[in-house]
Length: 416
Image (tube, rainbow, N blue to C red; front, side):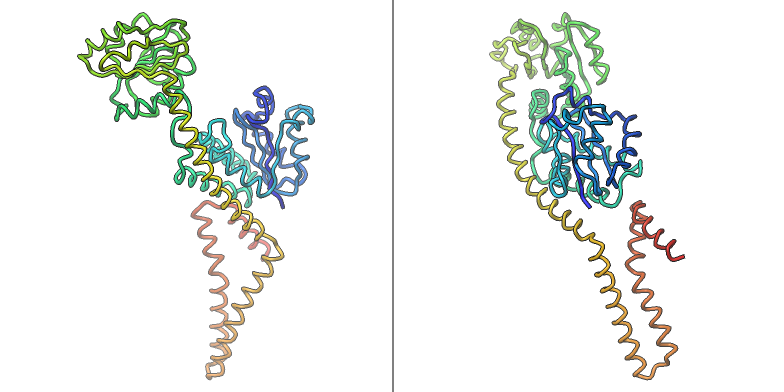
């Protein structure tokens, strides 16, 4: 019995190819049962995101079978897919899944979103009855490992994108961002990402100024902000505690005089300005003003470089955790050998029977009535034999572990 992982990701395949092999939610409904029908596939989970499509299977299938199925399903030449695909088996497959869920295999090292995507893929497969005892345990162990990595290492800490670094800087300067009034100048992709991070950090007062009001409204409406045009900057700047600018202008749009005027209206209340644009949106001379604190993308890049190194150091710690947990899971997998299980089960029950037989013989030798001894022997053996199965059934019922419950139901059916 083998665990396989096969797929493509941002490291091995172009965006165009990743789009070709991605599964929509509707496709997954049809694809999972078909994958289960492939020779040797007993359990299966399909993970499909913008950066990866991966098949996780348990059974006696081969990488060639899985690759051929994936290529055929998406109507691709198998040779084209093979040139960009990777496959892992058993311990390597287990470790790969744990790395993915922990954010160690992501485009941005340590990003947390992938864990939620892995959980969704697992839950979807479970709802489709595509997950059995082995993948159930593997994915549950993987979620625990990802949580341990997140809690015991710093792999997910520190900003490693310009947008997040900007918000992180603001968060360190303003202890409570929920009380800060923020002005975003520009409404492109970077501004939208900044707005998302700001909202996650509790910002409630957001203004978005852009050359076209329509685009400003599109961004502001997503995050409960107010939309404005660039022509309103003289009125908006005095209201802003934090200004984050990221336009495509070839010339600065926020000059020293404009900020100086805003500071007078603010009665010298400090203002943080973060310029994410290249070329710059904010004149460098703004930094000469008292109570104006200007940071450029170059300032943030130094922070990002240091943070990436910190995450890489933390990733090395995380790899040790994953290596230990992979070894533990492989050991559990090997323990499922049916010959060993039968031998151990027989040895344990025979030891129970021998213990109770010796006790009964001792009672008979002491003169106790044979009928009472036999009745007591039967009761003790029954209680001892049923103790562990009863505990397992109760735990499975409380945890909603229908796979274990189904095993015992089948056992009862076989006895009828």
